[in-house]
Length: 338
Image (cartoon, rainbow, N blue to C red; front, side):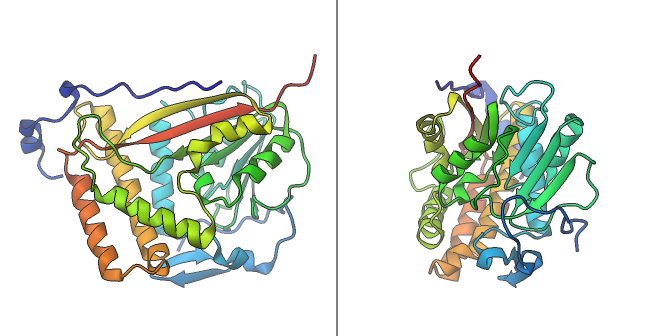
């Protein structure tokens, strides 16, 4: 069963007026490779190697399959996104009802590890494991937190004892989500949960201020084609996940959708804060994707630069009331029979 929830629809009173706009005006790393050993498969020395291309740093594990950078600029984007999601959830790190005493939690595609570290601090009695392709996590972490460098799409060593498997903004860069969720199901304990947090990259508005030729939607259309052709990724994968979980045998599948404002156009201060954070997260992502995937996908550099400039102008325009849906989807491995 799926449930949907939304940020309350925005009325005219929530929007910044022309007078409001006039008053406000225009608007080397501490992260080093962890030494934890992987339980996914065999590692090679390549996991600690990086490559610099197009002015950004990328990992080189598995021939650099992952198209998103792993440098300091990317850390700033991930950290802001992590803060934004916590603000959205009023301090919560997830929505799945795992109880107050989980024993094992795994963060798949942990990135720089902020979520894994914070959930480890909130549940000091739980063992928390973060897994990622890049060795970019901090060395100094809580004693119950560890990081593994490996590909979450590889075969897993059977554990069957995780209380929660967490994936945040990961499934759009997975080649085979069905296989991945099947492995997760096998490794959850009976009654354990999986939770996915991801965006549907499609900007819209409730008042018609997002035009049909909105440049950010053009960008996502171009990027979606490139990622699918070059990497086998589905940029809109999260829309299919509730049905996929049910087909695989998960129970109590639920979904909650938040309409995240894009930019500081809402009158409500909390929504304006979220919108400002989200705008920065999106623009940093646009810059990262313009640096490598679109160029390698055959688009002309001048065309890309012009599109990025038009996106910047659009998201800074507080008379365009754009938002994008962020989906939270969670499902449970069937509990053991009584």
